[in-house]
Structure formats: C-alpha cells, structure tokens
Length: 297
Image 1 (cartoon, rainbow, N blue to C red):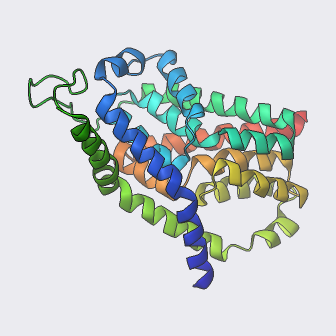
Image 2 (image 1 turned 45 degrees about the horizontal axis):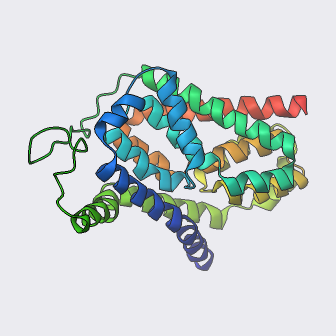
Image 3 (image 1 turned 90 degrees about the vertical axis):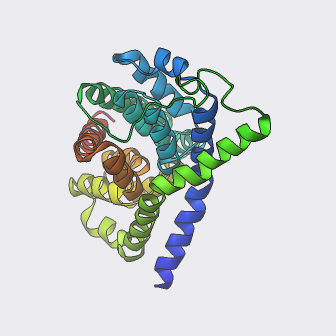
C-alpha cells in the first residue's frame, strides 16, 4: 500500500502541470478561437488538416493526459476525427526536453528515426480516422445567445476582459474536469497499481533480451503512464540491461501516447470502435518501426 500511494503521488505530481496546461489551452481555444478559423484549417477531410494538427501537437509541451481536454475541445468545435486523433498521437510523443534527452542517451540517428515515426503514425491514424463514420451525440453546435450564430465568430457574447477570463477558467477547470476527470483519475489509479506490483528488473534480466521484449514493451507502454521525457531514461536502462533496442523504440512510442486515462476518455468521447482503431494503429506502427530499426541499425 505504501508503494502504491508513493507511485500514485508520483503520477499526480508528474501529470498535474501538463493536465492543467491542457485544460487551460482548451479553455482559451473554446473562448477565443473562431469557428471560422477551425473550419478553414482543421474541419476538412484530406491530409493538410492532419498535418496542421500533427505539427501543433509536436509544438505543444503537454503530455498524453494534458492533450485530452484540448483534443475533446477541438472535436466539440467541429474538427474532423482524423486531425483530432493525429493530435492525440503527436502531442505526447514528442517534446523539446524528450528530444534532447533522447539525443543525449540514445544518439542522433535513434532520435531522428523516432521523430519521423511519430509523424508517420499521426498521418496514418489521421487518414484512417477521416474514413471512419462516427456519430458522436456529444458534439453540439455552439451558438451565441445574443444572435443565435456560431459562437467564436464574434466577441459580443462576453462584454469584458474579466468575464472572458471567468469564462476561460470555468470551462477549463470546472466543465472539462467534470466531463473527463473521473476517467483520468481511474487511469492514474490503475497505472499506480501496476507500477507498484510489476517486477520489471526480473523480467528484463530473464525474458526480454529477445522477441518477447517487443510484446512486453507494447503491453507495458499501454498500461503504464510514461511521459515522453521520463520514458527515455527508462528505455535506455532497459536496453542496457539486455532488451532489444527495437523493443526500446516500441516503449518510447507507445508509453507516452497511451495510458488508462487516454483509453477511457477516448472510449467515452469517441466510442469503442475509434478506440480499437487508435490502439491498433499505434501498436502496428510501433512494432513495425521498432523491428525495422533493429534490423537496419
């Protein structure tokens, strides 16, 4: 129990800044980004909105938990499913600190290969997402109470800077946590439970030097919350302990992108079918990329 509470505290401390940033960014998007701009750049089929979402995801310094409120907010604004899924992949998988740490520990070739794989994964998932026929009853067109037109097209729905700030904070830290807070908390509880009982070092020493390392990395990455920066020293330690370097690549790809919180929120917001596609693409691309890297390098 002591170990469980310690792990839970560690996860909460680790994700809280990114989660708060994600909620706040979502509130700013909801309040200030006009629907016309979203329609122009993101709310279309094709590859360009996916590229825009992937680039935005790479730039934003938030983890997989923090990206959830932003993605849900974009979806509620009417953004197509493809760019939203691409955003959910690219945002947690890369960050400036993660790239620098990976460069230092794993080398420049490994780092460039990892970044290229993240971009490819986002594009593949985005294109597949645009092909899915999803009826999401949670998405409602926002309307302005003053003129009954789309909210975000104008500024008269709020009369002062103080009201705008209040609106941002209400949406960010009351509406969004109310909608997905339970799923995120459950995800952190499960991750802490797994982290406190898994004999990782023993598995690495006796079982993960061969192909079984890929399966371990895939399952371990999916059930654990590992941010992109924190996962690099872990993957480096696994590899130096005998794990196949391709399996280390899989862990760095899957770990930051998936978590119980992500899985639960995606299922709630987008449905089980989208979740199945999301996890399948991540697993397939990660395994293929990891295996190819181990062969090439």
